[in-house]
Image 1 (cartoon, one colour):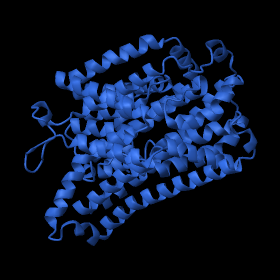
Image 2: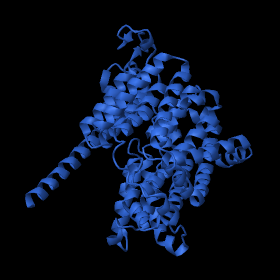
Image 3: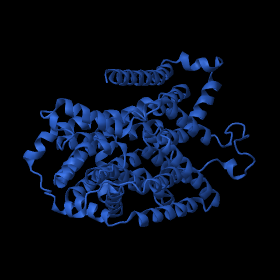
Image 4: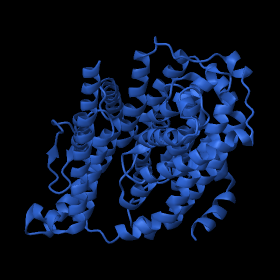
Length: 504
């Protein structure tokens, strides 16, 4: 099996091992810092990958993403401020445990469960990605475009509170991606006579603006609100011991959460937040002490954390086999592939199979690294974060963003793009638009346009080609079904709310 030679290759490379260890530490610190996310850190570090080898760059950012997901549990448990929506599920029981003087126990449960879930997801990825790639190789342009269409619709409609805002975010991403020259006719589109815009909007400045500057602007707006942190003295006084008898009831929830997260991770756009809350709800339903959940149950930490981290590996499957990122982190990693001239898709397993499996090996070693560091050092990481004043941290991030955007192509126009994207990201956050849908749609738009035009060139019947081919039709129906089910669920929720209001 390809993974074993890949492991041997990675563990005999001291430089790569050092990068994995550093990435595990960086991701944990970023994830545990209230207001920061792994996506923001990866976007800010994206320009330095120009000067790295492909494997080194991908492994470094991939492990930061994995460790950052886990690091979010530290912020949720100790500070009551989850950095991501997925960590909000951990917060439900994690913060009450911290208030009860059991933050150490909660963090150890989160660490063990995160490692279990993450390994389960990666094992599923390694076992199934080759099979998916083999099927993807048999797909033609009509089928590929139909998959793009389904991804656009699912990502835009399923994530977020509003279908309209989600689809609008996806459409905005497509429109921004169309800026520049038409790939077929070379005519200018949406350039408004600007020479710089004729080359299109750069991926790096857009990512840094939306993820980093947008987040900084949001945090500046919220800076006067109480973060709800526990103080350092309480953290130091916590009992951080965890016995097997205490964790044993958590084990079924961790394995169940791992399966839920791994299954959801394969589907583009659903993401870790949905996995975490589904796992939490299912865990509470099956719990022997459901009345304790929400008040400080260790099992209530294990279930969402396992599911949250299990999404990481399988979400790489649609990216590597179809070129469709399943998450915002996947969209940024796709940028790394493009920077190094690597075409992502089923042919990747014919041209660079060794690179793919070495990346998987790096990911598994990254899980082990953040697991060990988190189990023994999560409290120390929290104490370090408590000592960093936000009025120092965010100005540093702000200035670093400008340097990173400029350094990518030594272009002040990229700095302008980043700044505009930052304000767009801030406005989207403020008005509950779907940032993930915007970014992923921006990345997918060029591939979708290419396969759409190829499909039309293949057929004399125009758009009917998508209805004449069974696989293409199936994916088109999946996209339509996603909207229908989402509308149905929203209508049902409103009826329940109206009923409750009526009873009141």
